[in-house]
Image 1: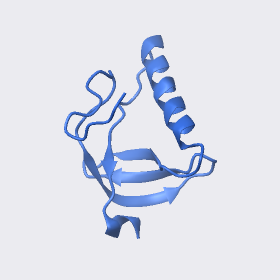
Image 2 (image 1 turned 120 degrees about the horizontal axis):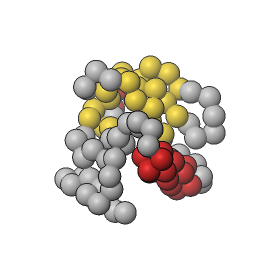
Image 3 (image 1 turned 180 degrees about the vertical axis):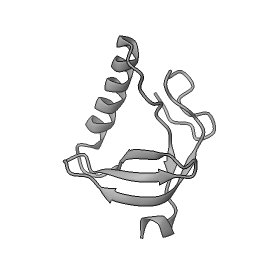
Image 4 (image 1 turned 60 degrees about the horizontal axis):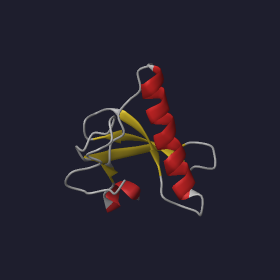
Amino acid sequence: MVFNRAEGFASSPGYSSTILSASAVLRKLHGRSQTTLVRASDGFLYLVKRMAGLEWPNVLANGVLCNQLARYLGPSVPDRRPIEFSKGCLE
């Protein structure tokens, strides 16, 4: 899949192409995937995996695969959404 900012992953179910902005970084979580808990512009909390390290492509692929597998098996899982971070929010 190729990310197109305007269209998102058009062929991927469970993906919302609405781009949110991070309003607050709440805390970094433990683990090697460098997951961060953030509050987005829609008021909801999201777990964000940052693009860092050599393992990033595997982390992203594992997350997408697990999301798709869970959707196939039937439990309710949230959509994946792109979240933009402003410079001020990262500081």
